[in-house]
Amino acid sequence: MPKNTKKILVDEEEELVEISTIVKVVSRQVLDSRGNPTVETDIWLRKGATGRGTVPSGASTGVHESLELRDDKKTVYGGKSVLRAVANVNKQIGPKILGRSAKDQNDLDTLMLKLDGSRNKSNLGANAILSVSMAVARAAAASENQPLFRYLNKRKDYKLPIPMMNVINGGKHAGNNLAVQEFLIEPVGGKNYSESLRYGVEVYHALKSVLNEKYGQTSTNVGDEGGYSPPLDKTAEALDAIMNAISNAGYDESQIKLGLDAASSSFYDPKTMSYRIDGKTLTSAELGDYYDNLVNTYPILSLEDPFSEDSFEEFAKITARLGRKVKIIGDDLYVTNPERLAKGIEMKATNAILIKLNQIGTVSETLEAIRMAKTAKFAIAVSHRSGETEDTFIAHLATAVGSHFIKAGAPARGERTAKYNELLRISEELGSEASYAGSSFT
Ligand code: 2PG
Ligand code: MG
Image (cartoon, rainbow, N blue to C red; front, side):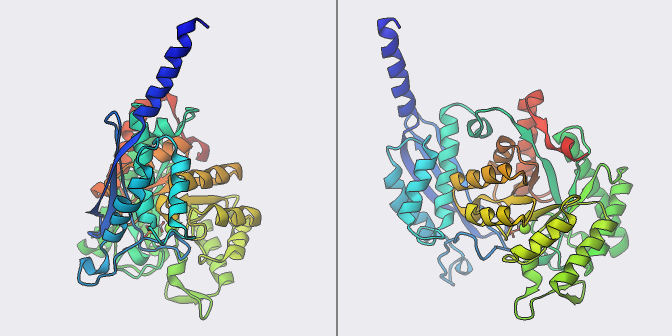
């Protein structure tokens, strides 16, 4: 090597470290899509690159999720303000990460876990920690002049996900009597992401006409995730309306599959160990038969949280029974937690996982859960929360990790379309560099 080449390389390395050095951290309180306060953090790096993380919030939260820290001061935002979490970033986390490289995602996440010191991030708040973790990743990507998805995956095996669109809202997301929380359409048949998105949007609009005609105009008021919220009380009625919409829009069941998120912990009664659905009270075994019947009647491709959040055995039974046809997705069961996922993999509890950054609270642990799920050959669905923000992190994450699905609500309301639109931009940028997950389901 000529004498001064070494010197130049060293300088370049120093330069890279310097570019990614964190010089400023500012957190604030902003609003989510339900009008509740949430945490947003901005990070500045030495040469001017910045990154932002805005944290979403669930309604049907699993009991095993990391803790979302709220102030509980009833006179302010009904107890929902997050000023303590914001202060934890500004006063505790911020000073500790100044001078560190934003590229050390793992180390920075570990540092925050140590600083928090609890099992479920209850001291600093998972909302505080995640806002920083996301902002770090974004700032590091900006320091390389890369979009986030490229920064998160240097191997470049990008895959665009199938949109899982929640077109009828029930459960805790709507003011009707549907026990099942989400009725999703999964347009697997498009030749690429944007075509599948179009199929889904057309069905969503056709569904509006179907519901208006059958149940009147108030039936197309929308729920938290932009899906319609008709005054129905039976699962099959909602599925029939969607099937009509699919055919009215000119599609068939090879092109558009259905998904259900039962979110069954919200209709489970632990005292009687039974489930209240369609006006009936069912045991776990009866609920298993109920799902089996639905899967044989409708083109259902995914079934999320069919049993309550600690029912690993019941999940394993339904996966053994229906798993060849259907993706059995663990959401509240796993809460994106690598430890709970390890148990699920061991027990063959499911064949798919829902991934939500804020359930676990750091980007590194989320990536670890995804890595484990991929090794176990689970299908992956990267997901929003019912309380969302304009942040598009999950669109990048889904593309980077080659997620099969992205669950981001109906194709309506800005916080939902923010994700679907970002994926349109990503797919435009990637062109033939990316494959499309739909092709493995047709
Ligand atoms: C779910 C989610 C997102 P929430 O259960 O999958 O759709 O709902 O954010 O209310 O937990
Ligand atoms: Mg769910």
